[in-house]
Image 1 (cartoon, rainbow, N blue to C red):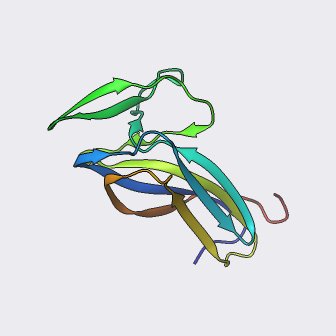
Image 2 (cartoon, helix red, strand yellow; image 1 turned 45 degrees about the vertical axis):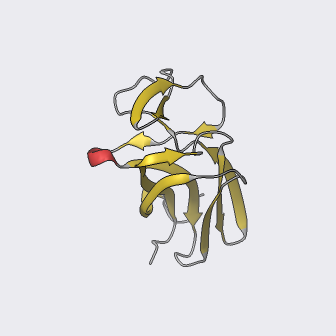
Image 3 (cartoon, rainbow, N blue to C red; image 1 turned 120 degrees about the vertical axis):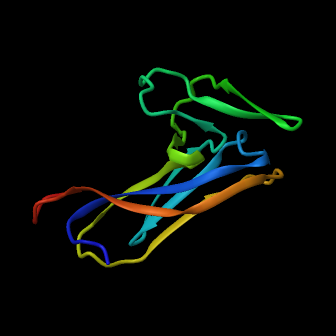
Amino acid sequence: MLSQNTTYMAYMVFMLGDRFYGLDFPFQEASFSVAGRESRRQVCLQGYVEDGDAADDPPRKHILQGYQSRRDTIPPVDDVQFPRKKTHGWMEVELGEFHTEEGDGEISISLIQPAHGKSGLIVWGIELRSKQQMPAGQK
């Protein structure tokens, strides 16, 4: 059950398997819908940022070469969400933000992959976290 008058953030928690591919470009589209209001954003699951990185640091990119993984940087891209590294190899990417008035309602979350081949995405789940408590009567 969701709390009334609360803003929530939705995150997908995942990791990349040993032999991943196709998760960089074209970017994936995250779609988020609550009570008929929909928002979309682009995400790059193969890139990531780390805690402590400056806001203007370029995202890094996991690159698989044969059986070895290396890391490179990605040129800055506007309006694309990059995952943030968590502990033990897991990453999280922000999928959207929504506000609940009444507390209950239907939430729909999807990640649309372009028609190219993909492999190696291991999804732990979707986390909904309250962003802030909104006073009654305010939006």
